[in-house]
Image 1 (cartoon, one colour):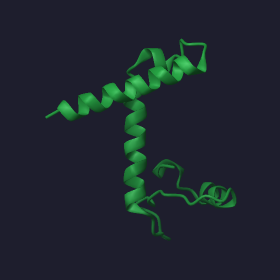
Image 2 (tube, helix red, strand yellow):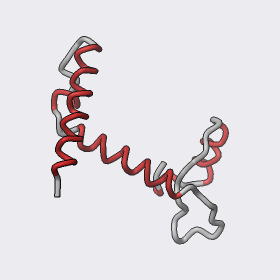
Image 3 (tube, helix red, strand yellow):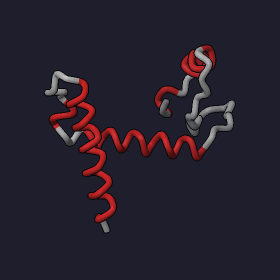
Length: 89
């Protein structure tokens, strides 16, 4: 979830599904709630990873028909992403 989905109905749906929403309240909200800030930061890291993976057209458009080949290219892209991030200043 993100701040755009922090409405009461959406939060209640998440609770009904047995999950815990990790989204900060909007600044203009009257009734605010506590949220796990560290978990929210991790969610952001995952979203950024998916954005970087979209740079690999082969993965984004799912050119491979076999799951094993698709998984190989996802793993390959993750390795390349890690190598690039280690060498980044």
